[in-house]
Image (tube, rainbow, N blue to C red; front, side):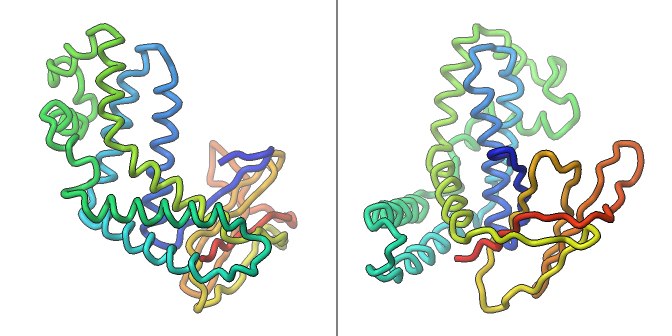
Length: 258
């Protein structure tokens, strides 16, 4: 993630945050290609949509989201009215959206975007894409025929399919915003390119974020254990194994906790 001439690297500490970051990644790529009027991106969009369906093919995802949204609603409700840094109107809106999404996932039968799983065309495409080059005309004539229809046909159908992802996109955006905004970053230094610190076992840390200026020709390798975080800064090398820098590196560390 690049923001204000900084690169933010993230390491989730639980499976739900890991899945939602992957969902965010796929949805953001889809948004880029969907904004184009060119039909050259249709195959890329379809591949991304299949990746999204595969990622959502988890029977426990709805229940985990519902449980987390219920927990967050309880946590937010405990913020005292005297907290001057909190906008009460924004907080009320936030809690209302958490409750709405919880009810949606609670009362929607089947897996998320289940309608698309029951679509024979998309089900066949998912099978084709399990093999490298499996969506070619020799394996997928129906798909090949559809790709050769007018661009407007593709656009209308894809927009209809994308409607099935609206609620999970809203849930992903909301959850990650709450988690990322929960804690302010701290300025720390990695001595000789290495940093480590302890985790409070009583704190509900959900996500580690490491922020570097884009001018730094380094990237972090983040390791998280039950009680400890370590960050190793590495010099990129496309031809051999990257090595740890020996410089002292100043960076921002955020232990997102809520």
